Length: 211
Image (cartoon, rainbow, N blue to C red):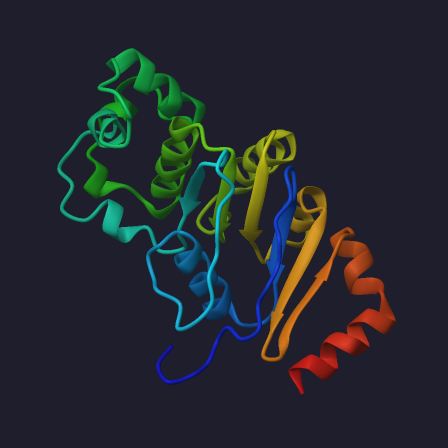
């Protein structure tokens, strides 16, 4: 990216029910990995393959393209992403779970705040019914109540998750596995975030991979 290698020697297998937090200091590397896995960017080398029974839903860090020039009401905005032309009541159910009730569901998509856009994107993900979620900084722009709701929803989610966050509690309560992307390959550990950052030997090993 811009002449700099951001992903190098990254290889891992994601298992059923894995909830993996991507950690590391290079946010561009993590976002680039998401874009490659979702087919939005071509890797210079290497391949990836999704399991045949998986379906993916993606929460990008930058969601502006989904709302630009959109004069649609939220109900009609969400209908764009519905596999079938669902009824307004059905779509309002998904918006209602994200606290868009009554007349709020008739707001125009192009006048939303940052937090409202995030809630719309989460409604879109729920509508997809995907069993693998890719979430790039989903807590950005959310207030504490919304973060707590999202946190609880992802803990209960029966599927696999690959996510990034700078929220310690969010990572600690959701992830059962950490993958740190360093300039010299990855560290891949099945443990909680607290265990990960308090393991002195492991942190020394990680420091060397940034050297």
